[in-house]
Image 1 (tube, helix red, strand yellow):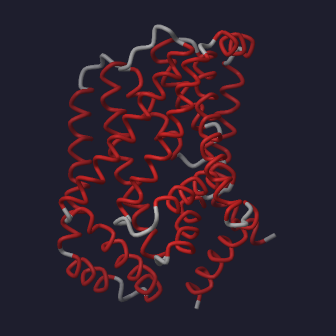
Image 2: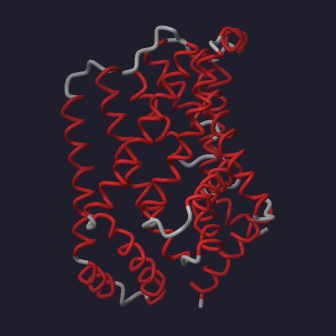
Length: 338
């Protein structure tokens, strides 16, 4: 019971957010209208977006493999990527991020601590792209004076973040010395944080390798281009009047909605973000939710197929991976308490 109460502090806030958003969706949406829009959708466009969803996850694996300096085989990275998204869809605490690093370490020969920082870097750059799309899309949604200035401010902060990471990568030893100097009072922080920081700074090396960084940014840009086209086709299937410019705001909102603390897979927050973003353009909450649920289905489809095949190849199950990850987490907590 004490362990349950302790864990509830982590999952309860996200669960409450999801439940509140689901309640709001149930209150405002006309499900008959939503069902009619699903029946009237252009399934040729939806089929095209399904294909692109698999192209997206395949390209996403190439993004990660590039960050890993092409050390693991592409097929291993692809299945680990799919397994991670599948774990995120059904397990709490975003264990999929740790899970894919854990699974890839077992089949690539790379250390877990060497892989995990690449996921952190990947997510930081995701945040940069998502924020940029959200700000760009905001210019098509809002005519409020000052929105352009906000875009410049946020853009400046994102550039500052990348420059800061570059400086840390170029001055690795200095950053470590500063960390150890200020963490002397907390031995546990120094022990655990120091080892992670070393691996993280090693991972930041991609920023100092010009050719590697260009390759990484090329694949990441292509990845977001595929996502934009897929979301546009999906939206066009329900809203024939949809404009390509809408998708910047929708995709940016989807990324941030999925990052908000919530139930596994961002249930409620993802649907609320996507349907809310589309409602800004269409004023049709019910059909907008149909688009959001379709996007949700596609996420389950590509991660379920790729991740499911990966788990079967390795003789793993979701429950088995969950138990292994929780054992790993409990081991780390025990080390912290020593």
